[in-house]
Length: 193
Image (cartoon, rainbow, N blue to C red; front, side, top):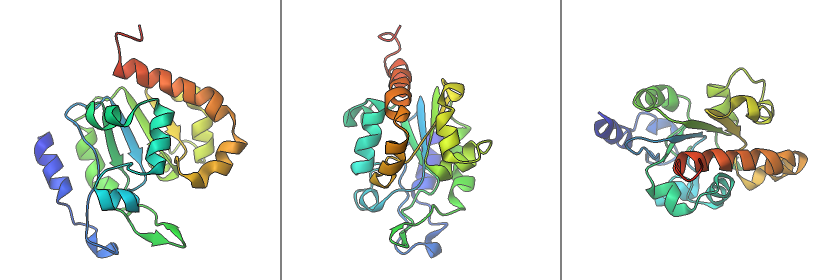
């Protein structure tokens, strides 16, 4: 079922009328993902290359996770399910919000086939959808100790969030080490015991 589901999702043009360009779904779904990243939507560079997180934000995200590019893309451990599989274009000088119909249409189909050890919600759109018990993203990120080991909320790794990161130094000193430890446990289960 998974290969057929991937094929259907890759050819989806359900929201194309709402896009400023042709639909180009971008996500990562290996056979048995251990870490699922639920993110916002692909950016322009990901849209152009067809590769999720293929930009400076992706470099920062992989640094937060403590993994190299090769591990992220080729280990089969990481899945990426954006809230909108296609780049939504721009609005007011920034990436537009994810298209609303995408996640309800595709996420349940993918997630019912998975048994992840960690689900990361990245950015406020993912947090609002998957961790709605928190009033805002900052509260969800701050509660990382309660969410681990199965879940974790992260701010988007965009440079636009540098101010948030500067105001919350504990993110780098406490949450990131906890995140890297958990990711390492999953990727190298024998080495971490």
